[in-house]
Image (cartoon, rainbow, N blue to C red; front, side, top):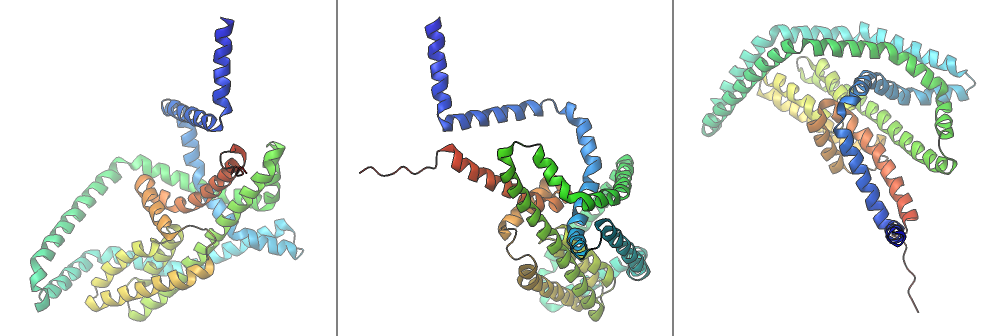
Length: 383
């Protein structure tokens, strides 16, 4: 019995002595834990509810922090107390909101009300413009195909509107819950932001104090790199959003597009939230409204979006962000499409920052594994 036990022990030691086997066993244990957790999801429902409540204020706080932290640091370097610097920036933001409420917001509100009021008339005008276009001689050969596609689009729009109406009525409790969470988030965010800006220098040392000493140097490197990438990304997206809003607002005003200010602000917001796809999403309603003013307006708006996208991709984006994220454009496209399909709009908004952060962690983990696994050591050639 003792010899049998000894042989089993020796066999186990030999298996664990091989680093590859050790890694595979660890992976198998991780997968086993994931499978077990997937079968007891009901235990984590309260945790999920808590996360859904705090995710909005936390994300909003982090965005505002990365935008405001450099200003606070600059003011502090010029011998202004940190708490006073934060208070001055808060007051400046309140003043900016008040200024916008007197200037831009009334225009946007008026345009939205006008669009809602005149929407049936605009639809009729659009149908007339399409009929005129189809009556042109060069469009005869495409007449039947276009009418068939328009009929399908109209049917889809009607079905979508009916489903949306039923969904809105049946999910009124979800809408109220979302409004409550948004309100709570907007109330809590200023307090979270103030204390994060005030005590941000204490956060990392506190986290490091909870970790083993030998992990602290690498953790500091990882956190610093993630912080730098997120900071560059958020500030860059804000500058791009401002650029898009200003360029489109001026261009739409010059060409005379109705509801141009509202469309420009919408495009700016979408560019901040959804990189690469923001202008494409905003272009859809802009082209629809342009068509209501005639085919030439449609051409002008298409040209404006093309020029804006070209300037953004080849001038503003390299100037603002450069290659700081080190993410290939094709990777950005794949990540956005996957996140949008699986998690919807929220997934598209958070996908790029989360991917950039995860990439940093994986790169450091892989570098550590290469050094410590012993699998990548090149053996010296024998004489």
